[in-house]
Structures are given as structure tokens and as C-alpha cells.
Length: 491
Ligand SMILES: [Zn+2]
Image 1 (spheres, protein in one colour):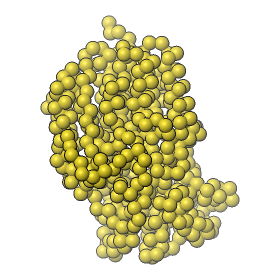
Image 2 (tube, helix red, strand yellow):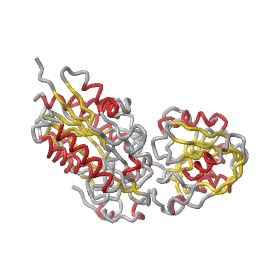
Image 3 (cartoon, protein in one colour):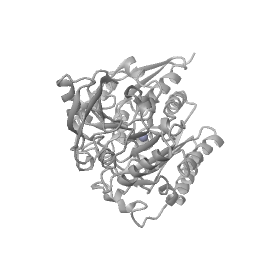
Image 4 (cartoon, protein in one colour):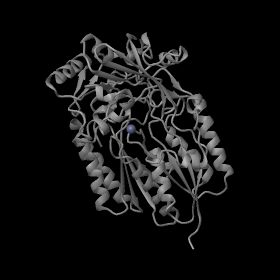
């Protein structure tokens, strides 16, 4: 007979752009479906971490999963700033209370992201692990799953036992890492795995647009971790690329290695990966070419004239979703056949809904901008409403203007990843897709073979989402302690 196992499942995840002026509030986490508990939490995102974890946990006999009431992603997505202390303390406080009242736990699964920024809490994921540890004790095992944009240091694994981080960007292996987390947690609980972990910080700070793992050297970095996992049974390697738009003390590249009771092996492998990253530090920065906005839009126009379309114009730097820089340039350079998806402007969407406007009605309004200086000025669009829709729990409006151009208005920052995301807007009628994404769009637009031309663009000034990270107003990070912004030595 196998001993029954009780595992608590908690979710608390955000990628916080702490430089945005709009805090992520308690209310932002409250919407139909969130917070979620029980089976609703366990069946959330079946293709991601949670789905993988639940699938494998339930393949094991005698395992009981308990979904503790947890907030899902805030409705603002990644388009909001510091999480308020109130939101963090309220949700975490309730989780800890429920854990404390829930009897004895053998294990806890923390579905995290890693790039959470909370006012007054320097390292939120480590804090979550410490509070959970305090209530479940040293007799239970704690495992976390992470996004490679997590900013982490040794504090998380000092409180928790294990971590599994996605390797690819785009994040193709979230389900796989969830599966691993379940299998290894159950093995640890049954005494078949004794996690021995090592964490190494590597002082390299990179903008996320450079971290595409579909090409060298980021692909090689992933490959090196995979090779170690292949050659050493029971060894796991996490490489956090880091998220520089969160002003937090544990920002930057992090390597974690985990072995079955062999701390010296974990040390050797973590040092190997960290040393490799450091040796290739220059190459890790010389990846994607990013064009200034006017030049990128000009190149898009030329590509269309040559017949090299579909073209993707990806404004990687827009962190609020409201930026109008591409829209301005499309108008100024008189492009045609462009779909701009999206400009986040909740007020404009609400105005259209309130006035009861529908497809075919004239539209004449200023849209976008305003969110902060990096969003630029609002742009006046005179055209015709093409669509008013409610989908994915959100309202959407599209407006046709100019010579077969379409701008899609959304309530919040929207990262378009697949051409099919735009199908409802008649995507087949356009030659240029101007979207707000850094790397995730490569799933549907690049890896699929869809786009003939891909142009990454950012506004001329080093605004909030820039690749020039030393232009950001950090308070908790000294960029001079990171390559390429200072004279840094490693190890
Ligand atoms: Zn990510």
C-alpha cells in the first residue's frame, strides 16, 4: 500500500513592469473566475504549468490535490506596475490561513512567475515560500514553477525545496515543467529524491527582446542546460534570463541546478552554465536588430513594395499597450494594408460601447497614448467602425481608416502571438501586422513560417521598454554592477 499524499496547490503570478505609473491593485485580481479555488484552480490553463502539474500528479495513486483559493493573473496582464502591498498581503494572507487550517500537508505546489514586483516586499516569490514553509514545516516539500523572466536569487530555494523553470522563449515548455514539478514533488515526498540545489547569479542584464531562444546564442544556452539534464540522471537545470523592467534587487540572469542528493554535482553544473553565459556575454547582447521606429516603418513599406509580405512590425518596447508610435508613422509615411493590433485604450472602447456604436458607423476620436510618456501622444483617427466585439472576457473595437488600414482597440495591453488571434478582424486582408510583442509573436508569425519579413522596432528616445537599460530610472538596481553597463568581473 502506498501512503496517501496531500498536496496544496497555490497560484500567485505576475510579471510586473514597476516603471508603469498604474499600480496593480487588489481589484485588478478580482474578475469572473478569479480568485479560483478547488477544481476551478486545478483546471485553469490546462496547457500550461498547472495543467502539466495536475495531469502527472493524478497519474499517481493516492495523491490528493487541494486547490487553495488563489488569484489568477490580474486583468491588466503584464501592462501594470507595482502590486500594492494590500493586494499581496490580502491574497497571501488568505492562502496562508487556508493552509494553516487545512491539516497536515505532505507537499505544496507554488505556481509562480518570478518577476513579481510588490511595494515593500523586495523578493516576493521568496517571501511566499518562507510564509508557506512557516505554516507547513520542514516535514513537507515545496516546489515552484517559474517563467524564465523570473528575477530570483538563492532565497527562494533556501525556503523551498525545488524549482522548475521554462527553458524556451517563446515559452513552449510550461506544461512540461509543470509535469516535472509534480513527478519530482511526489518522488521527494516518497523519499526517492533528495533535492540538493545550487543557485548562481550571473551579472548580465538584457532586454527581453534579445532573449529569443530560436537562434544562437540563447539557443545554445538552452542546449547546454538540456545536455546536462540528458547526461546526468535526476539532474535539472534552470536558467532565468531575468526581467529588467522590474526594479527589484534580484534582477538579472540566474542559474539553478538540482541533483538527487549530490550537492557537488549541482555546484559543478550551475558553475558550468554560469561560466558559459559569462564567456558568451557579448554574443548574448548581439542578437536581435532593433530599428528606430521611422526606419522600421520605412523598411516595412519597402518590403511590401518588393512583395516580401506578410510583414511583422513588432514594437517590442510598448509596456502599457497604449503606445501610438507605430500608428503615427503608418499615417505619416502613408502605408496601406496595415493592421495595427492593438492600441490599448479602455476609455475609447467604453465610449464606443456607451454610445452603442456598431460596425459601419463613423468613428472620429483620439486614441491611445497618455498612459505615460513612453506611450506617446494620442492620435486622431477618422474612419469607420469595422467591428465591436466581446471575446476572451474583454471588449474590442476595430476601426478602418486610410487605404485599407485597421486599428484594433483593446482595453488592456494585448500581445498578439498568432495570426489566428486576429482572424475575427479579417487578418487575411492585410500585408503588414503592427503588433506589440517582443518574442512571443514568433510562435505564430515566425516559427510557423507565416511572415516573410520581421522588423523589431522601438521609439527613438530610450523609453520604458528600451533595450538601453541604463536609461531606466532604477532605484533598487545598480546597473553598473551588470554587464554591459559597468566594469564587472565574474565569478
Ligand atoms: Zn516570460
